[in-house]
Structures are given as structure tokens and as C-alpha cells.
Image 1 (cartoon, rainbow, N blue to C red):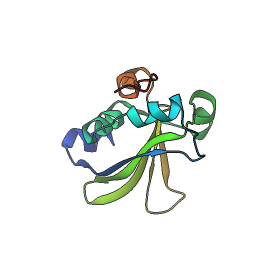
Image 2: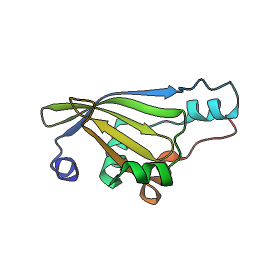
Image 3: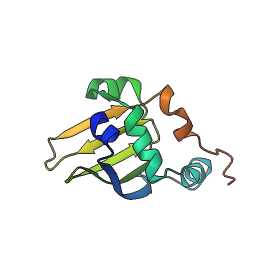
Image 4: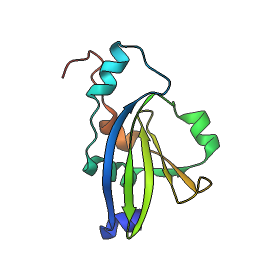
Length: 121
């Protein structure tokens, strides 16, 4: 992934924020999620700074929260689906469900995960 990013052959082709599942009742967390914004450039920045992680690392070191951005990313001519969770991890899914890569990004990406918990803009 890093080599493709360095060559400029990675493009974010779609990007959409999702709240849930599970359903999140209206409140401070839901407002904060709606105020969390990632641009296509920031998605590329996440993948540039992230490192590959194992499923065990995901379970033990990252929080899975019902707030994420999902979309499509192309690496050269190959399209993938991705999701970046506000818990500072991501997955990229290939052409089949068993081809999933996990990435985590703690300190290097902390600015991407700042949210306004007061609900203000």
C-alpha cells in the first residue's frame, strides 16, 4: 500500500460517514460523530501513516465504535472497499470476503480523529 501511495496510484473514489450499527441514540456521541469529518486526502494520509495489524491486535488494542467512514479506493486499476473507524483502525476488503487487510494508526493519525464532543461545529 505504501509503495502505491508513494507512486500516487491510490485514489479514493467514494467516501461516506456512517453512524452505527448498532443504532446510536441521539446525544453527545451521535453529535460528535456527525461533526467528525474526513476528506479523501485525509483517508490517503491515514493509509500512508497506518501499519498493518492482526485481528488479535485489533481486539486487544483498538476500540470498535459505531462511527466510521466507508467507501471505495482504487490501487492502480483494482477497486477495494474500505472503512475507517473512529477507534483509529481500518480495513480494506478485496474482491472476496476472506481477503481483508487491517490497519491501525495511533499517534501518527491522532489529528484525524479529533472530534467535537460538545456537539458544536
